[in-house]
Image 1: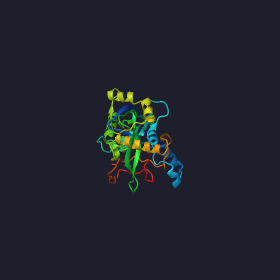
Image 2: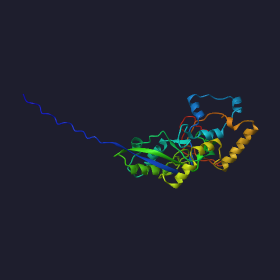
Image 3: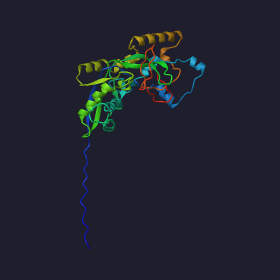
Image 4: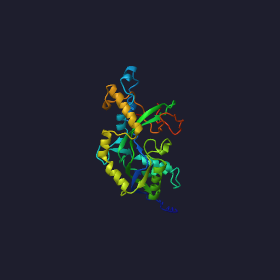
Length: 296
């Protein structure tokens, strides 16, 4: 009986995937607008309270600027160098968008799959200021409103970026991170959305004098003081807040016990508008939810 020949052993080539890592320091080149959804807005989404009666509306304020200012940043409640922070995935998302325009040979989907940021949040150094901006809400009527956020004029941050090698190189990842600071930005009214040019940044090194100054003057204690005792970001905000506080005092209400008339869903894609002149419809302003209202 013939003996069957042994088959050659199956050879499998395994690509050895490794993970590279570097720490990036970023300095803002345009103001950073904080864009956290307010606690009351999230609670309203989770457990809607329903429409209020006319009598209830008459005893409630539509806006609470100081409360809105304090709730707009992501707050670090544990130990850390700063009180204000930002979702760590924001720079990665900006890198993926920048890959669409940059001739690096790296696709957006590759950034999504092959790049990771191990932190949940990244620290934002810098002193927040109260900014009150007229906006048009993302509803069909494009209703004008006033939006109050924390705005950080001079800011900096650092993050750890991991990437898969040999599919990506450190130079390509760093190039896209640098490009994303010009093409996209992070936070509200960022360059990527077309309505504003905020949240832009540049890469730097840890010994940059400007970076060291921002870290020294815009750390945790300075941020806590700025949140406790708000200072306005510009003349318009100062005038609006002074008028609001005057009307509040005339009504016998306290700014520390502000209540809002209704909870509205947060949209990070609104563009500031002129107080007098109406803006044309902007296709870049798209709601994330279904009620077409802006957050406060």
